[in-house]
Amino acid sequence: MVTDEMAKAMEEEYKEQIRLQGRVPMTTEEEYKNADIPMPEDPKDLKEIIHRQDQQIKELRKQLNATLEQFRNKGAI
Image (cartoon, rainbow, N blue to C red; front, side, top):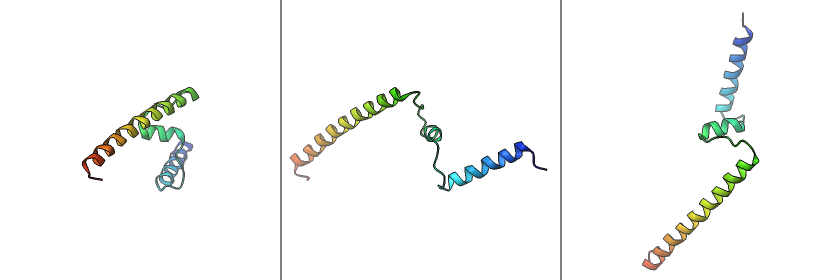
């Protein structure tokens, strides 16, 4: 006889198998858990994260442009 606990465990295992096959999208909580970053507590946190990432992107673009300019000056490009 299957108990409620056993049925719940079987259901969770089935859901996990379907998710691993890529047919069911992960929840937001699962995505943050897999990314090893803390889940934002409120929308302000998201705005801070976006702002920080925008700053990082700007810095990377500056570095890329400087590197490209060096290659252009050497005649490699």
